[in-house]
Image (cartoon, rainbow, N blue to C red; front, side, top):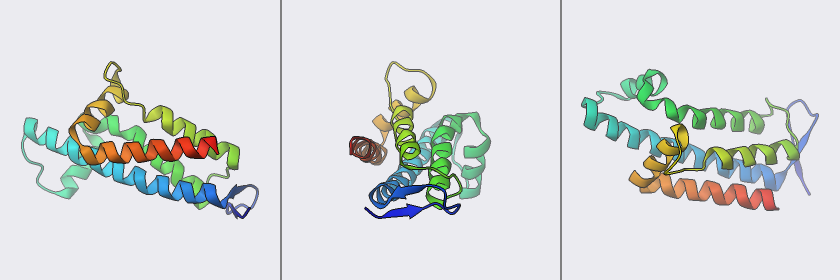
Length: 145
């Protein structure tokens, strides 16, 4: 089985798992974009139009309305660090990261904070729900393999 070596050369990740990480990264970016856009729509209904992409980015980074999205951004950064070799991980650490992603991305109608906001957003946006479903499937299959 081929492996891809991290930049430091200390640990390796099997190529099929790296391929899964790449697909997961793409799906996570799609999810993040869909969630940001659905939150923008909701925000605009309450506060009025957001005038530019720069304003949306500023709001996403600084406005409490959007703070619930930050754990997804942190997950994307951690995933990028693994894929670029900045975070030296082996297969076990990658599988643990996938399990953490599954836990994080667990919506709940009865939950609080992130899990409730995530649930509500998935109910509002079909593309977010589809990306969520794909991410869940990827993580489940990779962990079970």
